[in-house]
Image (cartoon, rainbow, N blue to C red):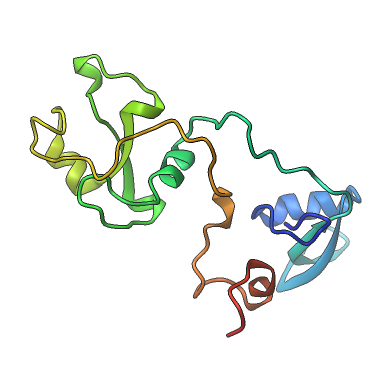
Length: 167
């Protein structure tokens, strides 16, 4: 979904795209080849939609504590081995385990691959001899989570708007 200024905002599911289109809030710039059908009509699934009204993007608001935002803060990297992973391959780890008084907060949760998380177990990074690659902090800003897309798996029609270039 693009802002009215053609700035990428986020990726929405096809159902949300169709709802926004029916509500008259967006214009469809590109369609997928796929079709969705109702009882009486068929609709091509929107690929790129643009908001009709400009939406101000909040830059200095409080960042919501969530799994996705922790992955973003940590760059989709295991904070123990430093390797990059997809969201499906990552877990969240309490730096100080809950059983030892650790809390569920920005400064005590990091991303970890399954292997490192299991290896660390119910110990602190120091006790497990697994130093963190970076200290967990409360982020002041995060990139748009929905815009983390794989350039090779991105539809060609999106690349113009995401600045991947052509081909």
